[in-house]
Length: 603
Image (cartoon, rainbow, N blue to C red; front, side, top):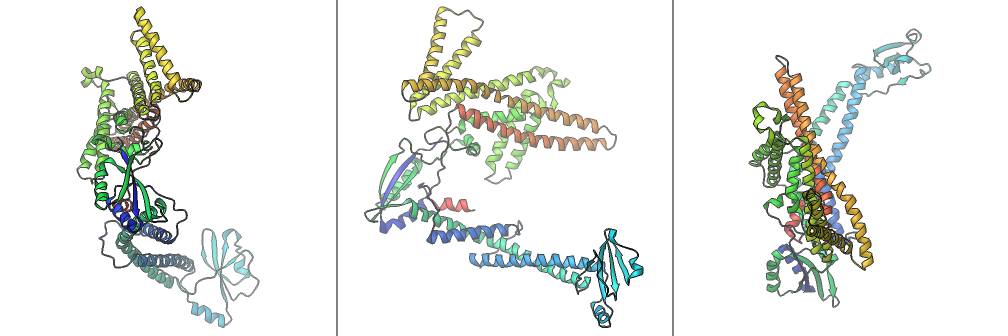
């Protein structure tokens, strides 16, 4: 159900307008929309820049913050936290790069052994030069050992490491001269250990900054968003008359919040006008449903909010969605797991999670019931169990499940057309509802005389009734499917008949997916059981394998099948049902100019 909205216009003297906006934000009931921020300047631009830096710093610190840390009051300002984060991260980046280089140099130096650079320098001063070389194995020439003063240091898989002693000839062709660090491998590793300790301390500091600094930045970000919303109303939503003497503002208020607003306006002698929404206007949408319907609102919002002039379909598709989920999953054992799991977890879950767990309970109960009707329990076909022979007739076979899926689809499609009648009666041209009534009458007539009375001889009176019903339904479809002159409506009616006749069968066949998914889930469960029985026949390890296949297989099947059991009913709802119900959508959510709203959105 959509909460009715009232449009309010306020006229406030410019000297009192700032205080008025503060009070309005404190009340938190007026929806004033949102203006453009493309050319933000002044305070708005500065705050947007600060908010961007806060969000960037927060995201960076989240990577280093450990969960479960105790939050300690932070004495630093937001600017100091941002500056320190940048400096610490810059040092961390440099230390990690330096550590990588040290480890690389140490690895290179270790190949050559732990020699002293001082001895090399003294040998060089004495005229004995020692150079270090690497050569690919395929380019190594063993004759070099006899031709040149060479000593092999190490033979690797791909390279040969050697040194030349006092060699002053031409450089070797295709051989790499090594440029080694003056420090020994032990010294390099000692330096690397020092850097690792420094990096560890930096990470601890970043963890502390994230744990203690993020709440401070989130609090500041909430204040910035609050101020930006205020500035948006001031700069983009406010108009002026009388050379700026009076400031004007318009907004929408739910009828449930009018008394609070009016009490403030009358107390402060604020001039205002109120009016209902005019045709063509699109007030913001606030949904209000009963406890059952509210559970399905997150699903309906995945598609679109309804337009203001139409029905909220949440409460209408909710029972079907629950039924379709059970139909698609179709196994009593899986339903029992969902029901018990949701019920147990609900006892320990937070308030924000409990509605989803209640939804899980409903889906589990639906699956349990449909699974018992279909006769499957963790892939076991109950109808084939000797102990349940007396109940065999209660279970549906595959052909009956197929038929049931089509019947359920036809019921939802017809129900959608009934909803469309109600939707059209609320719109600008209510006579268009006669077109939908015509379709309902046509389907009723076809069902009555082509199925229920097909084997009976009709009296002349019933033949007249049949022909009158057919003629009336076709005339209503042709004449009231559109608006405008009669010839345009006839053309629109013909097009409507073509679209509906060709589309209704496609819509009906879409519900076969209920049958297909339910059968697929049952077959997969049966295959898992057969695999477990086959591989688990061993004397000792067999029972272990049996249990592993059963647990892992059915868990995977439950996860995959549950996803399909959620996605495909959603498609049937948003495509077939919404289309036949004449759903337009496109509504914008009710977001009041409120301090509480901003604080909630910023966390």
